[in-house]
Length: 371
Image 1: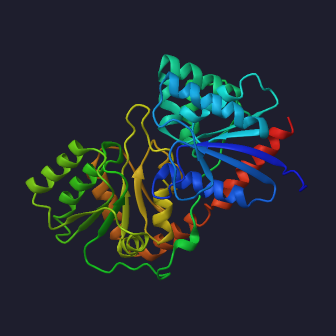
Image 2: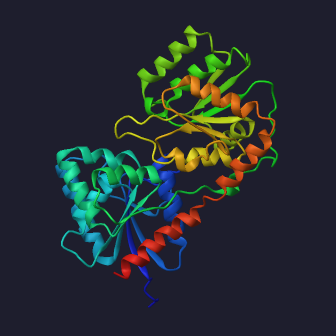
Image 3: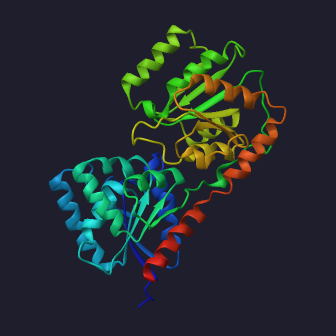
């Protein structure tokens, strides 16, 4: 018989699909845990992928009966592990908590990600359960200081919170090391689901402002339509202001096509909005842009504050302000030392690696075992 692994872990997540934000961050951590010689890991998800390492038994929708069935499956699975690692607060942190209830020898790690780590705290029932899960957890690994602060606001007594940033894969960068502006007008890029929280509407309005100085300004919006009403609002504004020649939409593109879009862009813009407790937990996309030497514009009072160094790798702006977006674009594009800004964006992005993220998880496992 082989030697028992040092850490026997049960991971709970929504999915491992690399084309979705939740799945991308989950898989980048889990695949490295699979390869770690000290870790034996079992993965339960709500939606399957092509990875063939997960078991699909968690509910896709959450009601009393579906959660009860999931808890029963988790309680059976935890018999062979020491640590349960939930990849978000709700529902997976709550399911993990219920799954190990009464088992004091089982350790609980919860990732504090963003909206679903905080917004449920406002609900009487969900909030009660999530607070219990947070208090029971050995460690809550927040992906940004902003996420940590939002959890702390509602559960101020917690002392088990720490920040473990997400990572990017520097090997994805295949372009030239020198990122030079190619045109007399800026080429802007934004990726992600087209919905109100991502703030694409304000970027489109910024293009209208920039067009006065840069008639050939371009904006490429890549992402599927999350909100038909929001997409229509954007399209109506484009038609009203005659911006169709400046703005294009792409979706369903390949990784190679996406890489080309990053390489041709001058500035990445995602002015995400914080609506109550709906917020951007971190913003991997700013770092992914940085790998291509593309400076970013993101919002203050969001996780972007950890992903952008204001004035050095891009700019942080006030939310819901097309005027501030336009001014930030002008600051970046008109800089004589654009290449220096580009290089700083790349170097900063390279500091965030998935290996560092996983090292933070392993450290949490180690400290949990030592308690």
